[in-house]
Length: 583
Image (cartoon, rainbow, N blue to C red):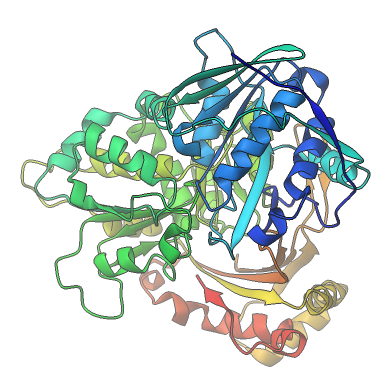
């Protein structure tokens, strides 16, 4: 048993430690400055009530990106000094963001202990490496991200901090080996419990889905699939779930070895960055060498996001959550007694709204940020939710969950094909989506991202869009002057959300132009980048006419795109003639 002492280290506030919707994200070079990480961690401990720190159990793990291993050792030493009783660490410091949520909610230690929260070390879908991004966020005992009340307190603390506590003489813990290391400090025993990263999460997935029916699908000679972890933490789960539990071939797994720099790639599961998967699924620029698999999926760095693909077919995240909601009760045992409600983030297309209306489900439109879904779920008001930025989830945890979404799709495919696996024609991903459009109508949808725009210019553009909203007749004159074939604007506002659970109000959540035919334009400034401002423009055209649901998305959206760019004066304000990314 090693004894440790507690040191009080003098420090001073460091500017810019305000956590965004998903914690604090900065370049590694910023995080490795003296006292930078320490200040933020101490400010977090100071923002929590004493019972969540002293004598408590905390989870500390992440997506394995560069600097994680050093950061874990620092947080362990600071936890010990702040009176935490035990720290749980996933083996090699790896836990996906959804797995951290599951561990906080579900895991019981050998001594009966339960976690009261956790630090997740991730910058999600941002690149990793010495010159790239690092991030840290705190999740509460419900397994969800800290609410604004706590993150505001953390930020206030970072502006007044004078010292932090650390057990500098505590030796580094070997996090590559499963087991408990015990220490003795001024307040008694302190343990570090390194545990298998996948077990708790796999157990939870097996309690939600019918693994046997998915096994039958995967075993069918007509079915083939491919899963790309983009060298993120999903690789720590992919082999266990898809190969060992569901019987897929190991050759179905792409880039499933977690790497500190994500193999030099951008771990963002979209058509731009998941190049290898996109090519294998027959959606690349050149012809695929082999017949593409029936189903493909990818994850981001911390495995909370997902992209779903069929053979030569892309499923938009907005359609994906609507299709999961429409099929959940029949296909997924966890939902067999019905859905409590559904929710989407405001910029996500209204495909889910139409399903909710048809199935008579409670429906909520919330600001971007998973904590808003968490409140609804904690109150028993929401079962399935999603956002356009490739995040889908349910009330089994309080984070979005990339592997859950893939298992949901496999469950729907298994259910739709239960009579066909003996040799009939498979119902494909594309069949499921087209059938959905025929039933509910199609929401043509695209997102334009303008990254690292001058922050002042971005604010001016948004302010001008708000100013325009004071006169709808003027807006409609401008719109008709650009394209006479676009419907009139029926309503325009800045989205504001009053939480039905706690009554809190979130203002300035995005600028909306809502058209008479159900189409929408949405403009938002995003808080997830680490430098400059990102303007996101969302363009959505609703089509109920079944003879018009098969059009090319870009053709169908072209008139609205033109209106959006000219109405916002995008090029004038930003100097950009084209977006950085089109989704």
